[in-house]
Length: 502
Ligand SMILES: Nc1ncnc2c1ncn2[C@@H]1O[C@H](COP(=O)(O)OP(=O)(O)OP(=O)(O)O)[C@@H](O)[C@H]1O
Ligand SMILES: O=C(O)[C@H](O)CO
Image (cartoon, rainbow, N blue to C red; front, side):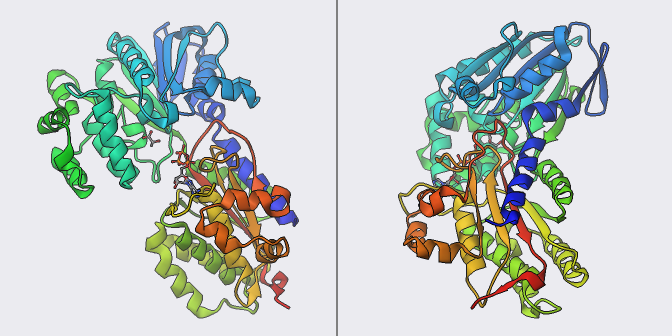
């Protein structure tokens, strides 16, 4: 494997390192004596600090927050995924666990990422803690991806089962996270600003590790500290779109026929959520890409960040990377003129603005002229896979495989190396985070008797990469304890190094 492969992996590691739960909390929470500085505000600590958290990464965030605030923390409750403490221990991530004398209670729940009775109990404890606070108190709220399932509080008279059925059907019908969480907010007592309302007049500071494209505060974990502005008509429109309106249980219809749980609470309460709440995004795909970019410079590469919001079908995303590689590496002084038009045409399908594509192409053109050396193109987001087969894989491995085909095909075999990895360390239901590919992929597979098309048809990318060259192309960082979606790294050698196909 080329040294570009090693460098691509190092750049990915730097991206993940930048958004580790303890790192992001340390970067955003500063304590000077009895002053706590966070999000540009200062709070006086007088043994008046409380902490709640929900999400896949909040255990490590809570451990670090407690190390920083020390004895000022009176009490905390975090709702975390079932089995996470054991998993972290077994993966050598003990620093993400709480000390034995911690004042924070850890509650595990939401098996298989679904709200369950355990998560309901955790949500109730969190609600109780927040409801007991007064204006002297500060409530630190730690939020990360997976938070919606870990904080279920169905608005009465709906049962947990009824609420779960609605969200499960929406997800199965292919609803986006925007649609899903808009509905979740309308059906919950704590989402859509409900938690902040519960905290009365206490000061609320939410530290958010974003796992949603564009970092929309009201959607990450369904925005429990962000007042929801969505109207019942919007919620009905979503349910109509997925043909669920007619089959809803009467309790759900009753909740939706009111103005929405959140709005009801606002009328009952004398204060506004916005007056006493601040929301701070402390970790995101953008932050991961910026740190990755600094690592690239250290490794002698010239970085360019394409966009942190790549989405759409992996086929279109793979095509885009194939075209960008040809644009950067094709022989000759200038890239073939038709490539730019084709790249721009793909923009809307993959969630990338023309402006970002043009800016990136400009950098690639400059580098061709200057002969600077290898370029490190960085992007992030969450593409999707249309599952048609029954194999084992994930969107990152499938993307890497498809990009490998792009780089291997065509008249000129690209010298580029492409990596796609999930920052949580787990791509779909597999042990890998993703994979690394290049223009040699097709030949390598053929020489080992592996039929790439067959694996792709069966969505079997993990099996493919496990069998190919003893799994050397797999990306296996292990569970990372964080999640800011996926990171893509494409290392592009300067055009003279491009290998002609013989
Ligand atoms: N065999 C497969 N091949 C390709 N993609 C798959 C396969 N099986 C599942 N997936 C994809 O994996 C995704 C689910 O995996 P994963 O749990 O990593 O994603 P997630 O929803 O982003 O969760 P998280 O937010 O925790 O990362 C879905 O997008 C699904 O389409
Ligand atoms: O918990 C959730 O709602 C998703 O992970 C998005 O933040």
